[in-house]
Figure (cartoon, rainbow over the protein chains, first blue to last red):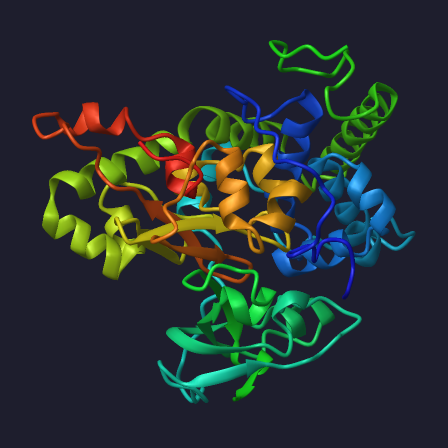
Length: 211
Length: 208
């Protein structure tokens, strides 16, 4: 959706302010919120695509005002509601809650969204000229506004991954090839951009058409 | 008044946000945690373990060791640049938010910088959790359009002859920059070299 999170290329936010010797968390509630979000998918079946979808639904004025981990709080509240965790009917967990002695191996294992490439044909080859489609879905997408309608070149094929857009809509992973597409800075930002600068963006094949 | 040396803001005004709001959200997170534990959906000790791991074990020292290894072992550097995930795993790092890694190399001709314009994607196993500025609107909005201006704010002046490559890592791949080894470090041990590599060097907003 075209909301505040998709801010690449906007002006007016001022300088980047970096904190010296920044701690991992700034407050106790940030620690707990991070941990809740890390542990909860074992019992409530959601993934990053769903979490991001709900973060993007935070109204733009709130998005700019809230601290980062408050996004997670709001998004998880919505996901708990969606899965009926607080409904009158008893909630059936997806599995047992993760225990302390399982955390290290869970982190090591990760949660890759890579899927089998068998039978999934790549529509593009490295070096192909492509154009990002001019789409404006009202649901979750990972095609940033600044790249829509712009032409670039396939730099690399990363293989097949679960498709964020369909997964976030609840339509399943619908695996697609994921490509790095390189755009010249001038294609994206016009003649004022430095002639030699480039931007590399990872895009699923569904976002692309031949240029 | 902000407190630059106080890092916990539970009971203080945050430098970034209204203190009342911070207090309210702290209470609501606490209530959420209690409720989910009571329902059997979370285990308190597991939550403690997640926090401890990301505060104490997983951070930019991991990535710095990867960089130092690449500087001292040409065969490793080659593996890192062609197939980063298994190369990083050789040092024992991998997993959540680093399942599919790519490492991009800075040279005299090319300077790489990493961002996620859409949210906060970041290579956790190598760099830990991202700093606030990386997730902030000024960085996400501007580094794609004006990388030279943003890098100058970090004190990095990029030669006009150098090509800047901005990597917007907003899908399933996580990126890390392999910085250039500084001159005059020829005799240094791998461990000493690692101490030269900061988090920002591996995002591309600093040089060692």
